[in-house]
Length: 139
Image (cartoon, rainbow, N blue to C red; front, side, top):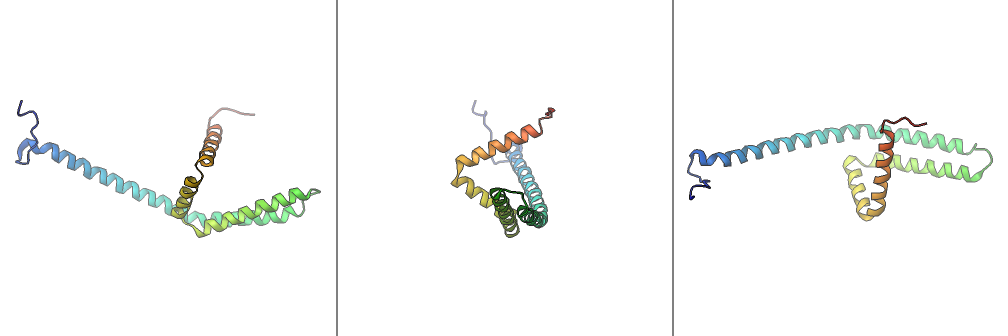
């Protein structure tokens, strides 16, 4: 029974488990590096598109401001349209000023400050995405 655990550093078959652990560790490091590279490429692609998206938000805000003044009758509706346009403009500015990493850090800080509403928002988004992609026909 003295030979049931035979890990030694003297060579032979007793080194095989150590070699396997080393190889597994090397492969895990390679996979982590590849995943990190893919993540960086995705972040770069998003960064490339964010300025165009910010421009689109600004154009939408300008259109909304222009149309809000011509809404028939109700001043409250016009005020709501202007408020929505201001929020779109603000979002466009934020997108111009922050890269993907900055946005993620900002979201993380907001979630930590407001965990309850964040969980509720995530649940609502999850529900809406599930409903949208459920495949059932709705009328």
